[in-house]
Amino acid sequence: MEQESYLRVSRAGDIADKKERTIYRLLEILPGFLSWTTLGLIFLFSWLLPFWVAIFIIAFDIYWFLKTIYLSLHMRSAFKKMRHNLTINWLEALERMKWRDIYHLVLLPMYKESTEVVRETFLSLSKANYPLGKLIVVLSVEEAGGEEALNTAKEIEKEFGDKFFKFLITVHPAGMAGEMAGKGSNDTWAIKEAKNKIIDELKISYENIIVSVFDVDTVIHPEFFGRLTHSYLTAEKPLRSSFQPIPLFTNNIWHAPAFARIFAFSTSFWQMIQQSRPERLITFSSQSIGFKPLVDIGFWQTNVVSEDSRIFWQCLLHFNGDWQTVPLFFPVYMDANVADSFFQTMKNQYKQIRRWAYGVENNAYFLFGFLKNKKISKNIKWHLGFHMVEGAHSLATNALIIFLLGWLPTVVGRGRFSESMLSYNLPNITRWIMTLAMVGLVFTAILAIRLLPSRPPHYGRFKHAMMILQWAFFPMNMIFFGSIPALDAQTRLMLGKYMGFWHTPKARK
View 1 (cartoon, rainbow, N blue to C red):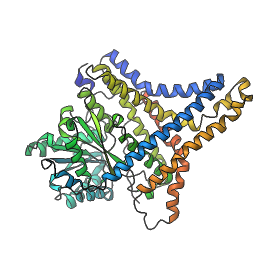
View 2: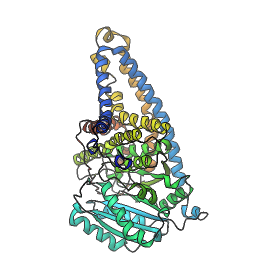
View 3: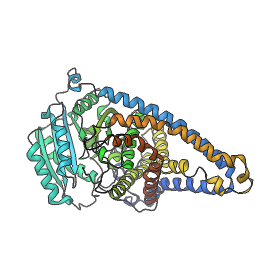
View 4: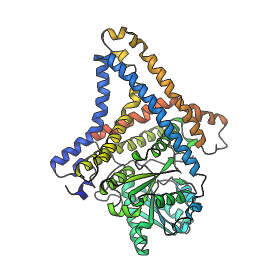
C-alpha cells in the first residue's frame, strides 16, 4: 500500500488489500475490546478472586489519588503561564522580530449558527491588537445549512467584510463524493478556495501564512494573533509544528446547567494539563498551523469525524515523526453546551462528548501508519502509541472502576471473603481515599471561579455559590458524561457501526 494511500484511510473498508484491511479492522476493535475486557474481568474476578480484586481496587484508588495530585500541579503551572501571557502586549514583543511579512488565514466553518453567535466571533477578530491588514478571513458556509446560513454570512460580510485584508465567503457543497459532511471537509473546501482566489493570485509566500481553524463560536483575546505570531517565529521548527491554544468554554457559562459547566471546565482544565506535557499534546478544536505543511499533506481529511486531532497524525506520519504541537499557554473562548431546555442540553452534551470520544478512530489510523512507516523512530511510536491507547482506555473505564465498581467484591465475592475484615473495610477504605482525592476539587473550583466572566446582572449571588457547589456532582459527571459516552463511541467503532459528524448546536440566552 503506497504512503499516500494509507494517509487517506478513514476506516478499514477503504483498504483494498485483504491482509492490511484485517489488520486495520483489528486496530479499530482494540479500544473497545480492551475497555470491555477490563470491566468484564473485574466482574468475573470479583466473584472468583474477591480478595485480589479488593487489593487491586485499593491500589488503583491510591494510584488515582497520586495521579490527581500530579495532574493538579501541571494544571496550576499551565494556569500561571496563561495568566502571565495575558499580561503581555505581544505586538510590542514582536517589534524585535521580522514579523511584518506574516499573514494570518482564519477559517470559520459554519452550519446553522445564529447571527448573534457568529457576530461575536467577528467582533473579537475586529478588536485584535494586531494589524487587521494582515488577516485573511474565510467564512465557510455549509450548503446543507440552507438559505438562512447564507443570509447570516452575508450579514456578517456587510458589517465586517471591509475590516480585514481579505474577506471571503465560501459555500461547501453538500453530498460530495468521498466526503463526510463535517468540519474537516468544510475546512478543506474553504482553504482550497482561499488558496486559489487569494493566496496564489497575490503570490503570498506559503511559509509566511499561519492558518487558524476556529469553531465559529470562538472568541479571541485581543493579543491572540500577537502571541501566535511570536510563538511561530520563535518555534524551533515552525513548519513542523501545530500551535494549540487553551479552549475556555466560558462564553455562555452562566447560562449553562451545572453538569454542562462541570464538563466545560473539566475539558479546559485537561487542555491546560496537556499544555504542560507538550510531548503528549495533540491538537484539539480551535488550533493553528503553517499553510506550507498543510499544502504538503493535502489539507484535512474529508472523510473523518475527528479532523481536529486527525490533522496532527496526518502531519506526524507524512513528515516521518518530525512533528510536534507547540503549547501557546494562551486562551481562546468558546461556548459551553446550552440548548433550549435542560433535557435537550443533556442530550446535546452526551452527543458532543461521544463525538469527541470517537477521536479514538485515530488510534487505528496512526497505529497502522506506524506499522507502514519505517522512518519514524521506535521511541516516538512506543511513547505516543502507549499514551494514546492508555488514554482512551482510562477515559472509558476509570470513572466506572473508581465510583461504581469499588464495592463489587463485597457484593458478589464468594466464600470467606464476605466475612473477612477486608470485605468489611473495603467500602470505608475506598471512600477515605476518594475523599482525599476530592480535596483536589477545591483547587479546581477556585480555579474555575477565577476563569469566570463577569456575572450577568440578572443572576444573584446564589448563582456564584452554585459555581462552587456544582463540583459535588463531579463523580456523576465523570460516569455519565465521560466513561459512558466513551464506551459508546468505542463500542460503535468495535462493531463497525461507524459514526458520522454531529454538529453541536450553538445557542445563547
